[in-house]
Amino acid sequence: MSRSRSPGRKSSSSSSSPARPSRSRSKPDSFAASVHSTPTAKAPKKKAGQRRGGSSSPRNSPKPAQTSTMTTTTTTRKPSSPSPVLLRFRAPSLLKALLPPPPLAFSALVLVGELFLCLLIIRKVAYTEIDWEAYMSEVSGYLSGERDYEKLRGGTGPLVYPAGFLYVFSWLRWFCGGDGSDIGKAQLVFAGLYVANRATVMATYYLALGAGEGRAQKWRYAVSIVALSLSQRVHSIYVLRCFNDCVAAFLCNLAVLVFVGGSKLGWLRNHTASVPYSLSVSAKMNTLLFAPGILLIFLQSSTYGETFISLSICAGIQLVLGYPFLSTYPVSYLKKAFELSRVFFFKWTVNLKFLPEDIFVSKPLSLALLGLHVAALGFFCSRLVRHVGAVGGWAVGADAKRRRLSPHYIATVVYLSNFVGIVFARTLHYQFYSWYFDSLPLLIWTAFDGGQISSRVAKELSGELHFGTIVAREMISTASGNNLGFHYLVNYEDGDSEHIKEGELRSMIARAKDEEEADSGLIKSVAWIILIMGGTEYAFNVFPATPKSSLVLQVCHFTLLAKLWWGQGVQPLLVVEGEGGKGAEGEIVKGKIA
Image 1 (cartoon, helix red, strand yellow):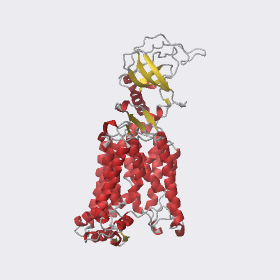
Image 2: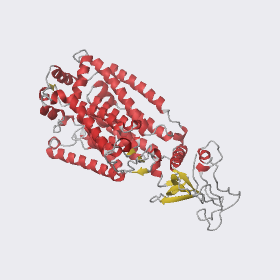
Image 3: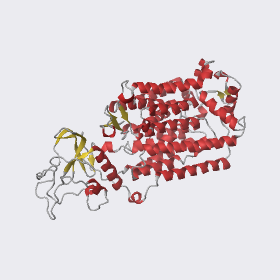
Image 4: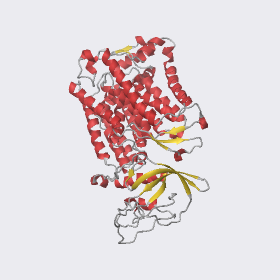
């Protein structure tokens, strides 16, 4: 493990100064021992019984003469306003005593349980007809040769979904008895879709929360998966209602997974993720709420030219799927498949039942909510662009300067974009719960548990550590001019100081945090998950909705949105890959929403 020492590493001559728990050498297998197993020069040991005297202190004690192993030159960048408080938080003893479940085995167990639960629900709970017959009527018109969207109708009114819906449910009509009459088969298909969607979301959370990194991350992942598996309403939406929203939600979650986990695809990641995302829009246009966040990810992780290609893929898929209708009745198709002026029935609203009906259907309310939606997106986006920026430029391939975004940052930005649209939606029906339910645990962790989870180290790099204080960020070079990269100058509690390589320091922080459970926000965030997701679940299970249930839902929504804005916010760890392809050795850039 390479580490450069500062040319004049300080050592205290007092033994009464507080010891550094992470630097103890008493346990050879401990994290501290592994950190300091280096043959370079070390500070002299303190003599037993020596005491700190008078006004002297470790910080002011004279430096002992030492022979440095290298001659270095440094360019110092001091961090702004380091925190004066040492991180000595400790989790409750019960949590420390409990080991988190292994993420992969736990995920497999939950998926098997979910499958059996869906089958049990199908067997024991009666199916409720709401939209299935209307879907089959609309598909029947298409299969009979009708291409005018204004003439494709079902029991609930005209067809208002893009062409992808017709293709999916045409297959379902054939599979379910040829005319869609075998609803049992449809329920089995949607049970499989539910399990597939849950597996996709689990994979996204595993990457975004860094479930393989430490105990706290594993607990966050386990809590999230359990919370996502307890919704009565979501199970009902999939296996007892067979709504089209489920198809759109699965395809959109699949796109998010590709964004989060497709780093090995390089510049092809965004292009690949564009395919399932555009397919989700073709099933139901509500997934356009994700579009602002996805566009921001495009701009922050690729060049303008690559962003244009990704957007072209999205548009091209829509053109191909909609060609039978665009080539015959284009105005009718665009007007109905992507209708933005629909006025929903007041009796079905879940989120605004406390308003009088005349206000609910009024144009001023619609315009006000649209304005708030756009403003909220603008505020969040402006902070991200100001602190993080966009890559820009038209270079492609090896000449492109790219930025690798952390999985948690990508997932949070995309989920946040959708959630802002949900908060300011003119109405939410019961099936709309599936649009954003899967994102709630991650957004709550982000808002109430200190922001960036998998890259939290970037936050502490500018502040106080539990084993010392970072006082400067320096570029270390040898006398011959060889660049050794950025190092951090750390002053310890007993007066020692040393330069630690950036990547090594991040590893030290992560391991020390895991050993001491320096994450007191874990229990608090679990409480917020219970409150917010419990309140949301309550509101979507009250039928018909009441003013009280709508108010509970709005309180949950705005509490989370406000905390995302004023709380810890999103702390992305961004690795800038320059022309030399430095990768993980590149400069760490911090951007945040708060």
